[in-house]
Amino acid sequence: MKKVVVTGGAGFIGSHVVETLLRQDYQVAVIDNFATGHRENIAGLPVDVHVFDVTDPDVMDLIVSLHPDSIVHLAAQISVAQSVRDPLFDEQVNIKGSLHVLRAAVRSSVKKIVFASSAAVYGSPVSLPVTVGHPTCPESPYGLTKLTVERYLQTFYKLFGLPYAILRFSNVYGPRQDAGGEGGVVSIFSDCLNRDIPPFIFGDGKQTRDFIFVRDLASAVVKSLQTEKNLCVNISSGSSVTINQLFRMLRSISASKVNAIYKEARPGDIRESTLSNKEAKKLLNWEPVTDLFKGLQETLRFSNRTPASSN
Image (tube, rainbow, N blue to C red; front, side):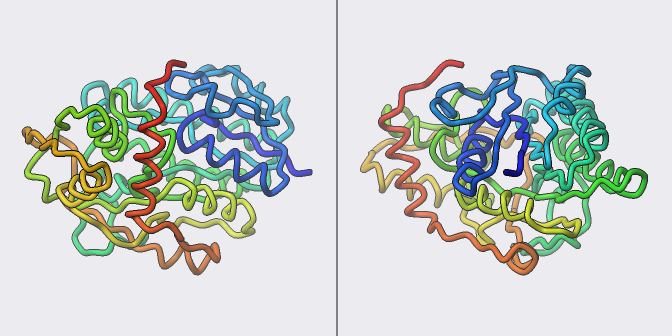
């Protein structure tokens, strides 16, 4: 049985990846500091859980001791706004933490490391949809740290032969996404609508985003483990909606009468984003199967029955 270490495995995305791996008979070890992950996300699953922070150099010895066949590196500081407020913390987690994982991967001679990158590496698109060949010009420290780790992965392959898969995620949504703090816009809207609280829309709401359902994304992550070649692909729906359209869809599903409150646009947020997923379809034999409306329905139902949780 192949063993996979998943950093950030108790988080929103990580827990869905862990479930998908288990369904395909992988042995899974989770590394999570539970700063944003939740124990209930993986409660009852047959996984080894190690409470550890990737910024701690000792995480390298831990990973090596687990003898993984591959690593899925999801642990990260994921907020664009937080990265603008505190770029040093962003660098500590997303670059230093990632280098610890990469060094451990080399020492463990893993067959593949999968890295969760982001559409933020592109910055403001010069053409749509954005393909992986699009220029990379991040407009936030978060996007810059993600692009930096991509470059480290390419360098580590040249220096040490470390096989990699870089997955540039579009906006991920679905059950278990945390609406607290800097949660995703879908979870924030869902939480507000369930509580009849007007949500904030930053800017005019006409900015577009490409939303990918978390279980579709998890399927792509696992498929990327099973490819022999190095790759860099977008994991996305391949289409986009405006934030205003998203809010109207969620309000319709919830039958709420709440109106949004508009605030100034946030620095670091891009205007338009639609990622092409053609490369992922071809190289991973994968495609998303969840319609946005159905995915929003499931997300809203989960949000409605699940109170805000603590670590």
